[in-house]
Length: 333
Length: 259
Image 1 (tube, helix red, strand yellow):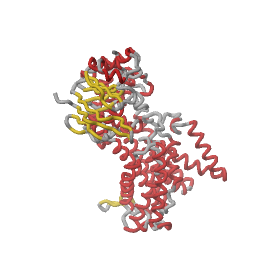
Image 2 (cartoon, helix red, strand yellow):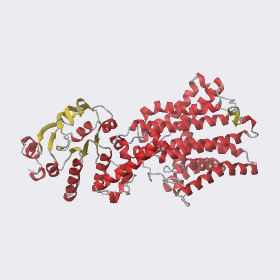
Image 3 (cartoon, chains in turn brown, cyan):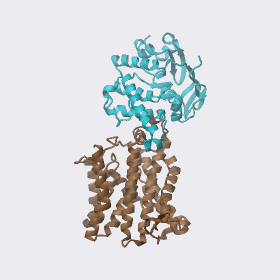
């Protein structure tokens, strides 16, 4: 795809997200969609992180742990220490990244299904920690989080307090999609820089990568910590929207969904998790009418999709509208 | 001349099994040294010990006088001891050219953040890597397949790709793992020429190999292993007439070992 086509796609996307969607919601008065779409954006950020661990060849089913951790870090700082939400947001990401370095150093030595199993347990471990630690307020969770205040610089208000919005979720919508755009832009740049190619080298063959002088353990941890940073950011904003965070805010099922979002969208595409999250989120809701057959149909469709489209939805591309990143086929190690 | 690589008393035990037993030898700068031996003689383990992919139970490997045993493999590669793999170990999904470009990482001046931000140093590195990769591909006769996905290559080219990836890391000493295995006569001849050409670039070569005829033809010196221990060391002629070597290969037709 040419540079101009890529630029056009970008402009259309930004226009759709920041102008078209709010206008449509305004016309149809379906303001509940602000909350729904914010959720999709935040889940997409977390899924984008999972996608990056896939990119170095690791199946990550533990993103829920970092989303929960990020939510709690932000909530605790806001409620207990009165820190501004805007400061807690990067702190939540940084905390998760730091935690993931400690956790990642030992567990990233594992591969394939072994790594996947450990990460699966991770979400449950963090949930139990949230139940047990005194600072997290146990099963009652952290509630009544105040909405984010204004951001002012030299007396100039850059972002008004979320209280001043008639529809608070509209403000959260803009925040969520803006952060999503920044995160995916950063991810896109990462994958298309040399760092991305080093990650591909890891995914393809770690022994060969280390024989050519790559510090394989350090690069693995780097990718994992970026992934967890995304999870923490997503979780922190989620807690702010919900104005609460509980041990059950992110469960193992969420961790599995983050992974499925990546599979569905396509592991070879940076924007795969974004599309995957959107389709999966609404797909699940649409199937609600099927009642007791909801889960059956849902899983049946997922299995069928993985068999028919192993490289994800974006591999269809009738308009050739997403740049595919190498490697063309993600190989299960 | 002081040896570039010294292996002294190196031993590797896996539980009760002694894979490599008290092996010592020197590698002189600019020579081609081959390690041979029957199946299970401990060649591959020795290879991994030198490249520091496994830690020795006893003994040590020194490169230019500095102990490299126990260091992480990527550190050893940075010092100039680079191993290649058999043809199954490649970046399957990458093109030939991209594989070689990635392998240039050791030569980069820019840091990871520099590459992320696309600084001037990073862009210069990229341009330099591209040029150097093209030069290496040309040198090894891989230019015609530069844009092929590596997994689509025929076996002979895969072997050359392995060497290309090794050369990209700018080695002082390159460890080749069975470079002639499974090749027919003609392919072997070309691979032997290629190996000599690599040496003529100033790279010291250490080979682990089965193919006796090729080894006899190419090696300056040969080290023979049997049951993990060194049983002989010397030039091709010396090795061919060594009784312990002949004994070790008993049952193998004389022709195979070139005696």
